[in-house]
Length: 94
Image: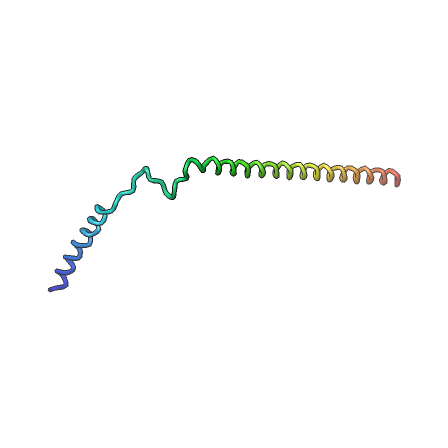
């Protein structure tokens, strides 16, 4: 007899506790941002460092592209030279 009463009381009390907890909880405002805000005075410094980093990365990419271009040109010249040597050797044998 006691168990059904406790069960009914629990069924009514648990949702009531959740509703009260939701009403007492402080809502998150939309103007609050996650994390900490960076002060305006320090942002230009961060931007400068990012710009310098990107400049160095671009210079490295240019250097790499130049090296690849030079290496490709060297390899193509070697292939042409080898083909010419093969042609000359083949003409001498005929």
